[in-house]
Amino acid sequence: MTSDSQLAFAHPDARAAATSPEAISQDRISLRDYVCPVEIGAFQEERGIRQRLRFNIVVEVRAAAAPLADDVDRILSYDSIVGAVDRALSEERLSLLETLAERIAEILLAEPRALRVFVRIEKLDRGPFALGVEIERRREGQPAAEPAAEPMPQPLVLYLANAAITDPRLPGWLDQLEALHRPVVLTVGLPDTPLPEAGMALPQRRIDLLALEQNAWVLAARDRRCLVVGTRTEITHAIHAGRIVVWAPSKIVLDAVRAPEAGPRDPGGLAAWFAATLDAARLIGLGTELPGGERLQLADRLAL
Image 1 (cartoon, rainbow, N blue to C red):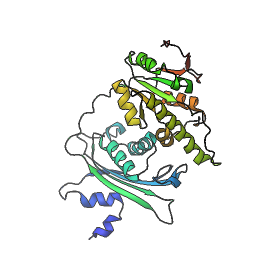
Image 2 (cartoon, one colour):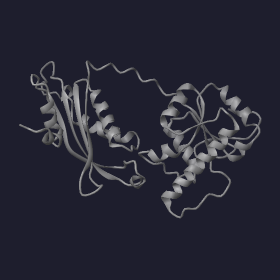
Image 3 (cartoon, rainbow, N blue to C red):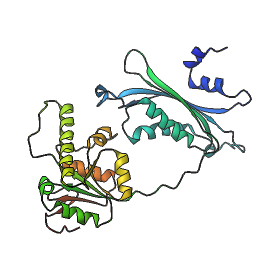
Image 4 (cartoon, rainbow, N blue to C red):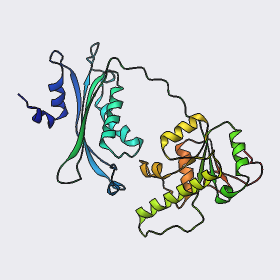
């Protein structure tokens, strides 16, 4: 007889078999010892480095309603499990293994035949041991049909030079932007005041990003419509609502799976990168040139 302590450290496949109802013998598909380097972790020392994660995943599946006829399109493929891991890793940088495990389980349970999922993830480089989490998630009832995805409106991304931020005509420009009845994301550059010099690349990057955010708050103080937001969720919500927001870049830049080539000392290039991630309809520099963007002169009426 397998004890609870033995079962706790057994492979997820053994746990799945031991915890299935006695009257039901489920089919299972598994992924064992899938190792890949990932930037993940809640501690500052884990930023900017990759550490190995090991994935062990078991999916219990509903028996096929008809003979498989050796047709790969009628099964839950091994590639689907690897794809769930890769998709969860590609969305954004995560701090917690628990969050990553939940996302993998959610993706797999969206498969029509998947009934129950065991996900074990271990960090292999935090010491002479493995640190990890394991979760079990199951579907209750039949999978719900996924609603059709609402297309993301294409926002207008407007970069404001410091002269535009301090210009007394700013409220009038915001009136013109509101009259467009479309989402607008405002971005800013570095303040004109000298920045602290850290002498090391990683601390300097954080200082420069914070300087951009400070300038975003300077803009917010000029008009109540300039709402500062820093997460992808907030920005997506604002875009769907057709609102004006100001981008605080730290979180999205630091959590990007593919970091932008432009750093915070190149705020115009950073704005262009962000506009591309949003599939923006237009990228406009108000009072300045932008790579790949349009330039608008500071005037009473903007040529929008």
